[in-house]
Length: 94
Image 1: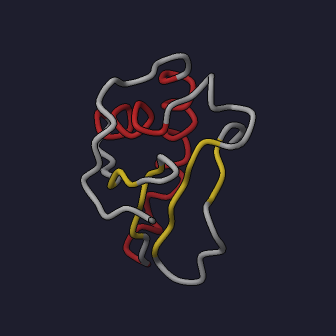
Image 2: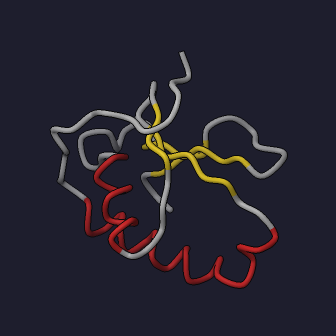
Image 3: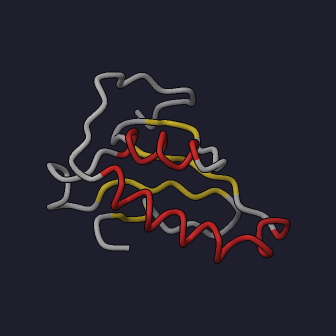
């Protein structure tokens, strides 16, 4: 999805996504996370960089297409929104 990037090279079930270079002024990771949560998807906030942390397992397979549709819609809905709340609910990567 344009505007997003996966951090690192996940080999297991933990995935972190952030805003891709060049999209920082157009999209905010935490606004995206709030939009996803409003649709029932939960991600932990973490930083630096501002990113969303997910745990993915075989149990997610039946809903992955639904998730990707919602992710695309939330990227579009969150575009141009930057949250004042920069707090995290997960550990930092420092």
